Length: 308
Ligand SMILES: [Zn+2]
Picture 1 (cartoon, rainbow, N blue to C red):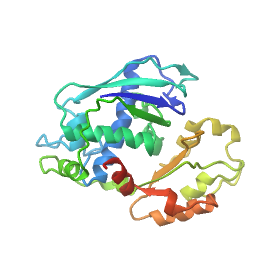
Picture 2 (cartoon, rainbow, N blue to C red):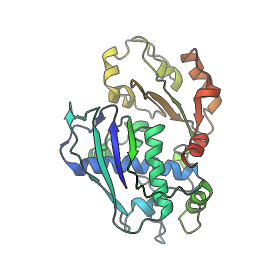
Picture 3 (cartoon, rainbow, N blue to C red):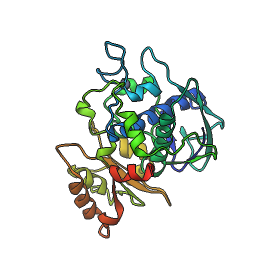
Picture 4 (tube, protein in one colour):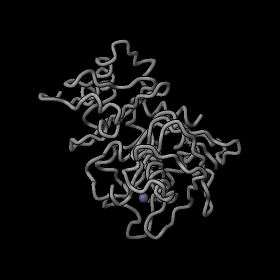
């Protein structure tokens, strides 16, 4: 599978040696895996948290459907990504405005369902999400790992597929049957159950802005109190990593990107706390002409669009 990644906003590489292709591959795969897991969970399957205690394999060497493709201890990843283009780096980031050719190279047999899920993951990132994932939503709680894995931070990209895509457009029922097959390890998602398309929402074409130093529409949607003292300066807007990844020690489940034609805002509701209706009413407060019926999409609807 050959894809073209069009970089719409700079992708931050964490300031390490950015000329290394392996680094970009590692970052991309980390992000791809994160969204793949969210997709699997959204389809009713189980995907372990590969950084958590209960990661695969279990004591009987069983693995979940995500580890089947992306690998875990004792089971190698089934593919690699080859960068066909050397990215142009500017200010320690993969600069916006360029197209990167990437090849997905199978190393072992990849099932038709896996090709479809991989294809769907790229489309999800391209049309509704962003490159990033774990680093978007949990930026500050694993500093050690960030040094270790050098994730690409995040940014908006669009993905174009070459004509001879490996995905045979399997219908959603076939894909659901595959991810929920009893041969895969299953389990309880516990505290990362929110990272599922079932809890995802998005609004394309709108972003959350800072209005002045002290108020931000972003904070309003997060339900966070506005800072009393001085806020971050407006210049920070040009530095999305600082704005979204933030210095505040909390995980944020809302992301918003400003881009001339592809701006978007998306997030995850956390079961038992904030639901879709609450998010809609918060969004209505920050965008006066917002029409939730027309503009607000849930993960369910995204799934229907992706598996037509
Ligand atoms: Zn697993």
